Length: 189
Image (cartoon, rainbow, N blue to C red; front, side, top):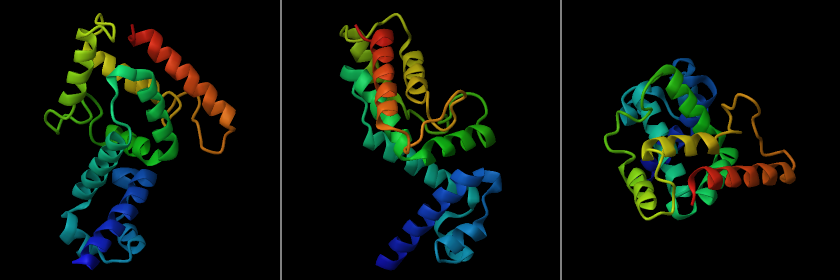
């Protein structure tokens, strides 16, 4: 059983790298299997097909991000900065999200296929609005969308400038400060 878990983990790691680099259409199962030191039949037995494998790694990346940066409605600036750092540390999530948007869900909710996926987050933000921590003149779902967009200002899909780990710490600190200040001014009382 231990070997099966290790094989599955290697497949997920190899698939994450492959999909992040090449997207869904460009990813090749044979490259994933080779990188995972397994065969295609084993990969298919665990995940069914390439689309199901993408879904599994994308869901895992999103879950890892949500767990690594839990929403703190009481301190949205800190939460936004935490997302900036998460995107900087692991560019795969942004790349996978971009591929999912390009190849799967060009319009509407990216996670619309996952019922009630954002209910806890929206409830926490709504509660913070109701208790006066956040301005209540912006619909909660719109506030959430703008918050995520602000945190991703310098992420890998950024239009103007993409941040990278090798840049001087002062540049990251400047961006973190600007992000926190913008979120505070936009949403917090």
